[in-house]
Length: 530
Ligand code: GDP
Image 1: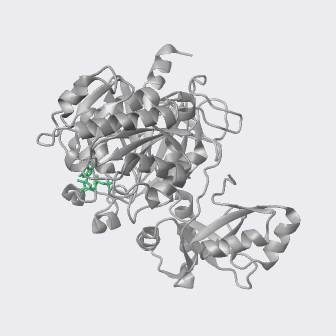
Image 2: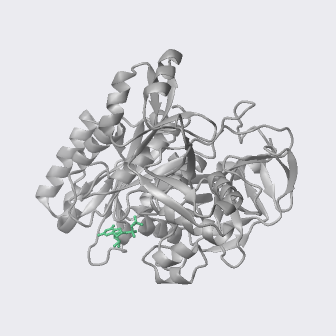
Image 3: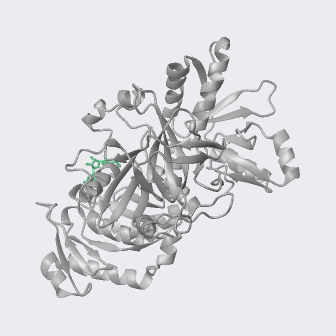
């Protein structure tokens, strides 16, 4: 394998930040980009509170609501690393795209508000990362405000997420009395200066007992508490174990205050040295290892419509899994078995899109898409193979859907098919009903609006939706006999596009009852049956 290519791939870090809205993801992303020199001032990263947003040319709904419907990719360079951050949409715009974006990441950073701990959305995103077994790094944010006890937060990670942690740093004080973070690995103290938070002093020490700590922190009680806590960590905490970190079993924890840039650089440097370079992926011919396969390959993990309302174009996001991408290259689109010239790819640097000439395994590129691509499509150079199917995740909102004018049925079906292929919605059909009905499932309610809007604007179709009281979808598999009884007796069954049996439930109680009744069936939260 060509050494330059190996170096290029090894220098790449592609990760996503997972968090609950308001934990500080926009702020942290911005600070990371500032360190990387990708932006010059704060306030440039697209956020829903950003006035600049109104001038962007994203979807109509996005403009009306001032939020981002789809996630984007940001890249920057730092210390010889080429970093790609996959941005995951938050608020009401939370959708299956958010989950799917995680399939393109090699690791994740879980951002937690120190006062709030693990919140609902973080939990959902964490589960998807866990499913893939990728390493997860934790940044506990907003230490400049009074938050919860760090031990309590570690316990919460274990109890709610089932992951053990290893604090890479440890705070001295918090909120009003926030003094510093001690870096356990580099044995140094990062001092917080509330009057000028950007002015960060870093002092090397011999360890937690170094008297220098007393001198600079100047608070006997806090230093004593810090020493006791560190001792407790050393005795009762998990050991630092890179293998467990790599398997996603142990999360390194960092403490900081994104808004003051405090702890961000330390986090970034540790993260870059610990996080994995582009990792191998499963495929129909076995594992595709970017360190072994020189030829280009990649998969589409997201299709985004109307990034530019004027041109009505779609952009398909491709994660390069091996080799080098060159502008204008010909590849094979495996699903259709057709050659395809990749002529107009774009890369995403902060807010502006630019044309990319070359990219490497680990990178994400946006491909202009006149309708070729579906989620999960594989593009290859040379021998043909396909990457494993992209899983579907349980929607949380459901509507029965019909077209208002029967004459427009054809356009309606076409539109639905397109939107399903893009992954904006999941389409189910009722099973065992006299009159078959179509049920649309979405992860975030905003997708219903997106669906209605796009069918109207792109297919000139008006639809009628009637909300269904379900909150969970479970893919069902297991003992054949029991499955046939289940199919006959269970209410609210639907099939997905691949004709797999899916049961819909209104609440957890209903779901548990069914599970108890059919002990030999498995109820999977995703179509991967994992
Ligand atoms: P997002 O929704 O996760 O993208 O969160 P934002 O980055 O928009 O931050 C949400 C709010 O928290 C904003 O008002 C930020 O100014 C604030 N914030 C972010 N980081 C910090 C921090 O380190 N300390 C404090 N006190 N506030 C922060």
